[in-house]
Image (tube, rainbow, N blue to C red; front, side, top):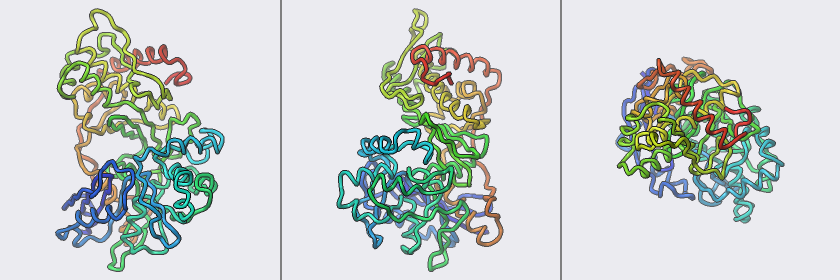
Length: 481
């Protein structure tokens, strides 16, 4: 039996899982918080190493043959010509680069030009926008920047003893804004547009490649971003979509090719297996439920769910367009939410509660349709987030999405994905696995919900929602989702 480890260095903590290489069974785990504020916009990367060291205490890594690293995405670690930090790392949640992102869009001519070049238009979180911010706000630091890494790249480089060769992977590279998942190449011209000069960029490794081996003989795999690692840990494949219910929402699916989307609604990432992960974001998901709970004076989302189930599908004609913070899908940045269909018989708390759940799910179904209309196959939806456990969500989602819904048990999927990648690289190095065949680990334990006889009812709810959406915001989806 071989043993591998996967670590997830998120914005708040490091989680390590040690797994059996053949089955993926978790043998032991480690955890440590980062010694920094989780929402910090600037971080000394040494904090990530300190957290990693603390999480690995007590002989956690004894017997481990390979390690995979997943980490927070989109940040920027600027290095000088000697590989030393130019300044603290800029994290993905630093929004100061919003103006810089808009400048870059203008600089290349349009959002469509960026989508064609690298799969998406610049966003504040991305490294390319942070480079532009650095050039405009800290020109001395920008001038000294000779190389750039992301969090997982930097951690892998440190674990290997800071070799001359620096590496990344397709997943992390696809989020920078200067690497194209469609072509597999960097766009140095976009870095020069952002920073004013060229920099050294990490080599982009394949999914089963090793970044190197430590002097002690420990193999380090390519690593990847948290999103890609979590998808790999879940075991999603072609035909699967993942819907994440946070304050905002996201829908991603496994697809065989990169999607350049001129509308800007699709962000084209690469995954950790050689495939692609087109992602569509919505601005309003669980914040819709929390707003409804506050309006109705209920204590929590569990109580809101119980209330909603006292209503019936369609919420007695009430429709809530949940564009409370504007919306990204469709692109309605200045929109507000809309409550439609008020009649005397519908003005009851349970109907508003039901309309909140249905509005959130219909908005996410719109995002799913954006992918479907581009040829992405969606036969099964993995539903993630604490709200996925709510009975009202589980009752309505399969029929509204029109497909089987899988609610995985909570687990450290990003760390598991990193461990699975480590097992893959180890197997390739030992000749027991092919470069294009990842280890067949057992899938996530989950509850499964089928649309069943409710499918027709769910699609009627969708049509009621779409009719209201297109009346209030005509043309928001062109010909409609």
